[in-house]
Image (cartoon, rainbow, N blue to C red; front, top):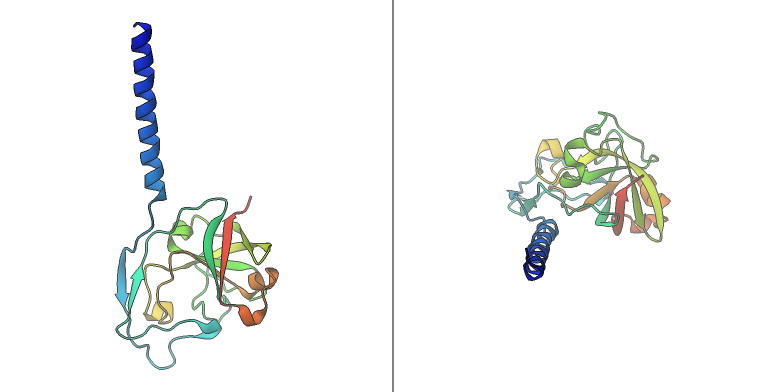
Length: 192
């Protein structure tokens, strides 16, 4: 091959490589779109636990469902919500990871379905950054983004796909005034 042919080959290779890299980045940057939805129904009397201002399904309202969550990075943007993992709390059944209830004083979380990743993060720790502070919390449950409005989910809607559902201990560690508990923009990462 002559010098001109080598330069042309290298240029062609560079263009192909850049195109492939751009395509790969575009795939990873694609948004997580709804996979379906659920039409709400009115819960039977006393069946929806609205502790911690949890929503109850409303008849006729459409709730999107997701099998995915946004891509995880060192600073994954999320919404922190409040949940009680205690027996009788708005979390409902025992935690999926260990089939146990957890006291509100323990920093534990449930992750949206995509981040929960079929239990791959079970009993691992994540670091949550919010309100100028950080806290490590153990993943003990899934915040189900695929199902809801039924007895298994305390007649609550499906979780959004970007939720870190946290115990009171997490909110306290982040220094959020208890009157402001409920929703907070945060970042999280897998703890090292």
